[in-house]
Image (cartoon, rainbow, N blue to C red):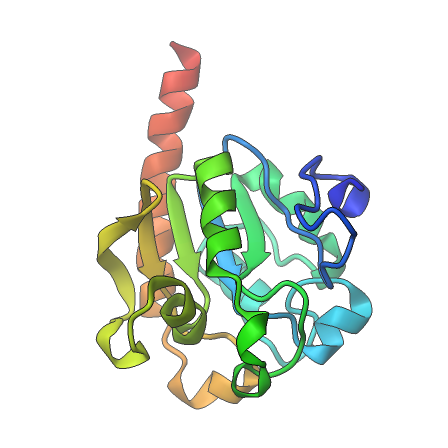
Length: 192
C-alpha cells in the first residue's frame, strides 16, 4: 500500500495497520515525530486534525510552510522538505492512556535510518522520552546534544490542546531557523 497515495513511502507494517500513514521519503530535511494520533486524527486519517491543535498554524507562523495547511493537506509536506510520522502508529488517544506496547521506538529508528533526514523533531516530550529512553525532565526543549541515527534531534513543546498552558513558540522558531539553514546547504549541494 502506498502511503496516502502521495508520498510513495511504504506502510512498513505490511498490513496497512497505521492509523495515519507515514509521510516519509528520501531527501527530507526534517521529520516531525508525534506520539500517536488523537482520536479525531485517527478518525479523519489526517495528522493533527483536532481544530484546537496549533500544529498547522505553528508550522506557518514559524515559516516552515508558506501558508497554513489544513490537516487533510498533510501529503503536501514533502514538497517543503518535511515528513511526518509517530512513535505509536497503531494506537490513538492521549499519551497517558496509551498501552506500553503502543510505543515502537525501534520501528521509528529504522525509518530514520532508511530515509536519513537531517533533522528529527519530536512534537512532544513524551514521544522523545519513549524513543530516547530518557525521562521527560531530562529533555529540554530545543536542539539536543546527541543524534538519532545520524540526524540532529530536537524536542518541541506540544501543540496539543492539552498542552496549551505550557506551549512556547521559541523552540519551534529555533527549529525553523536551523531547517532553513540546512535547506540552503542541501539546495546548493544539489546545484553542484
